[in-house]
Amino acid sequence: MDQDSYKAGVAEAFNQAAASYDRMGVEFFTPMGRRLVERAAPRRGDRVLDIGCGRGACLFPAAAMVGPRGRVLGIDIAAAMIEAAAEEAERRRIGNVELRVMDAEYPELPERSFDVVLGSYSVIFLPDAPAALARYARVLVRRGRIAFTSPVFTDDTFPFLPPVFADLIPRSLLRDLPPQWRPEELRRRFNGWLQEVADLERTLRRAGFCDVEVADEPVRLVAASGETWVDWSHTQGMRLLWQHLGAAEARRLRERLIAGLDALREDGGPLVIETPVRFVTARAAG
Ligand SMILES: C[S@@+](CC[C@H](N)C(=O)[O-])C[C@H]1O[C@@H](n2cnc3c(N)ncnc32)[C@H](O)[C@@H]1O
Image 1 (cartoon, protein in one colour):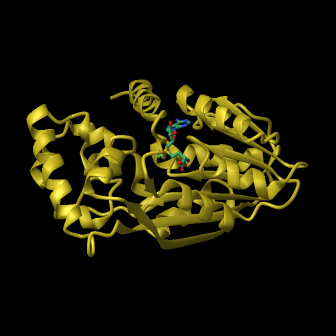
Image 2 (cartoon, protein in one colour; image 1 turned 60 degrees about the vertical axis):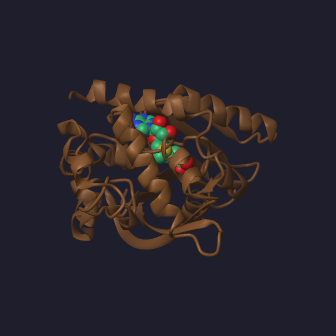
């Protein structure tokens, strides 16, 4: 699949998901975004770029931290995400954010115009992320910071899911995916550089960064029930898997996941999945 059709597919999936994205009673992206902003620690007055900003999981905490003299620009390839984030900014009367539809792989932004670049669960969608990182190094001021998250990839299940799903999603379903969506192919083509810490550090250094820190930390995903999780999974990366299943296969997987996830709940309490997340920070060498 060429890059343009791949990106059109990603934009389409997130445009369709935007209305309910991160608004379905599952806590995950919001606490992860908040934690990423804490790690990036923007200062009052900083100029922040949030790439693949979605509905603003990083954007809004960053806007609060930089204060009225700072500004945060959120860019996303999915117009519906940008519209939803802009509406939220207006509703909350947040004046220091700007939102634009833009391909984050090719940011059309002046050099040395940002103090911090953020990207929560978005760098993984860029077909040539190492080349994009070099562009982020150029839009950052010298010693400016980049901070992004990615899943901690495992070979056992669909790339965006934590290891607990290895037992819940039959391998045969993943083997039957079209070649470009198979876990090993996604990892090889797009995210090979993210899996080993040494590769990640080397990639960031080549892109013009120094002081690289990589920390794998669990983020608590909390959902009311297995069913809530399954409904939510249609609004995030796993949507790519659902899209390729036939109706009968999708129904069987849904039932299997609901039963398996409900079995993890204690005494009818919420479903809690400790999801490993990779937090990466670095500084532009300048
Ligand atoms: C999993 S969501 C994360 C959104 C947000 N950062 C959060 O943490 O909730 C990934 C986002 O990346 C965006 N995205 C994917 N590829 C992109 C690209 N090439 N340029 C800009 N945004 C992109 C998607 O549209 C989507 O909003």
